[in-house]
Length: 403
Image 1 (cartoon, rainbow, N blue to C red):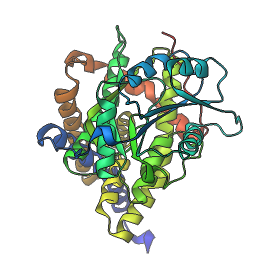
Image 2 (cartoon, rainbow, N blue to C red):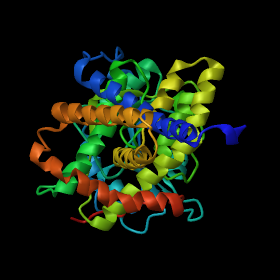
Image 3 (tube, one colour):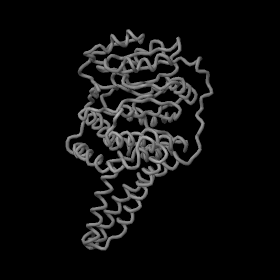
Image 4 (cartoon, one colour):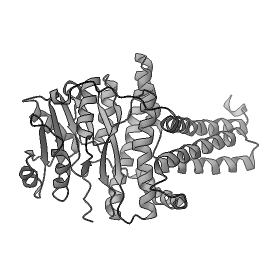
């Protein structure tokens, strides 16, 4: 039977299905961008007294002597006398523990080279906190600046709604950024601010992004954190969502980290983030969609659609590749549907980026600098090829950029 179907028809069906697989995430991206830009602010529930919430800040730290003092300075002036700041000195070989202790933090040391990863460090810290459980645990990476007022806001919202809460997490640009730095920081802003804000205004859950995360104590104890997954934060958020605790965005809290200047540091960080993202997509996207239909949970379906969106540079590369392939097929066979679908995809993708840039990125990324986007995408090609043939699967700490 298959041999009787014209080759042109089969080719059109195949290419159209691939085009639809790209069109869906671009539609989701456009809806998120439009929501972030045009919808009114959605008030967050925080009708609890900050003074009555017992908070523990949990900070995993592996060889962070270069940066941990500055991070603790941004935190300690926000905590109350009844709060705890616990640093997990995880397999450290430098002065991380001594510096943290001198700053006034509670330091617990973990030595287990056979189980490396942020997830194991967080699990170790939670077991320590279980001796005197707090109301809310706020997780902060050791290389971040927690902006003034962020800690109380995160803790209040987590306690009020009894769900995980994610702050805005952005990369701060260096004093003299290159064009690639500007594009990279903007792409990060779209992922960690524009898209979660759009979901928040729609009343939907977001993904966890790694730092500036707050959890009610019963919620964080409902899942197992002890793993060496390379994007343990994203995995944690999805596990909690499936367990009935979808993360919520908090646009009033901001956490900043420094954009790496050393090219090898930047490449290592990006490799871990994006390889991990693709691995989580492959593992959790079917699980989210299946659970959404089985349990009748539209929140999981929406979160699955959000997870469907690949990194922006990869999405552009896939669109370009599919467009070239469809144009080639069009030159041999009279195939119009894939071309039409890909034109829509390109239009929606372009509108999403322009809207995000106009509202959130224009001040840091002048229009003329957008000409560097093709170079940024070319820089990412080896990273994505590596994910196909030699994907990073083991956790490695990001080496700190001394500059």
